[in-house]
Length: 224
Image 1 (cartoon, rainbow, N blue to C red):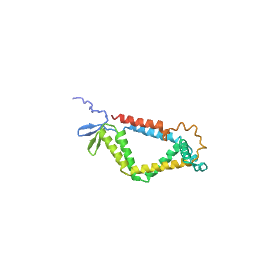
Image 2 (tube, rainbow, N blue to C red):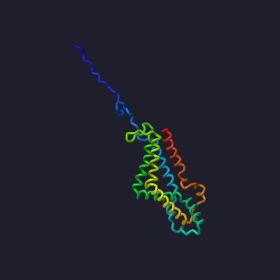
Image 3 (cartoon, rainbow, N blue to C red):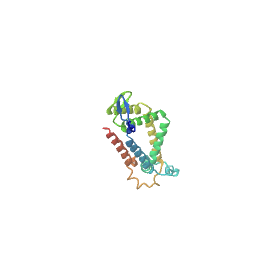
Image 4 (cartoon, one colour):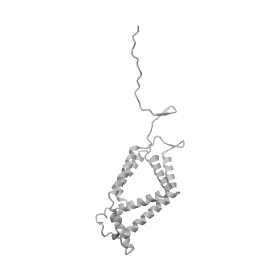
């Protein structure tokens, strides 16, 4: 009588599966380069925090006792330069508020601008170069994708309401800044230590912005 032996069950090791299409395996790819995108967002947040940490007290900006009519155009321009050197972060915040209000009151322009920015981020800057971009059943090369985004940017900015909204908001914001700088007397401000450091309207963004540009450039270089 034959002795019964224990049944041998085949044991298969678990392996990560990939989606199959047409008999061939297709490795799943993340929609964007996550580390580069996270670094980009981190640099943007660092830039904002660094800029806001250098703003002046808003009470100084709106101190009514420090306003007076300038004696001449040269006096007004001198006041604008001095006030700009001291309140440049506050002025940028005011400009950003005017721009935000203009976009919020024009939701169509806001949607177009957000869509354009998202297209640049997710379709070119932080999208892996492999696999290639496929839209509506057509495969686009890197040059075709870049050309399509450039043409879309030109159309959105110059042939829609986005361009007029942005230009109008910038003009209104600059007019408010120049008016405030002309009538705000800067004699009570401590300007000696500020004037050498003031090299531009966005000078406080220099370090963080360079890191942000570097991260975006590295993401583009990795695609080549």
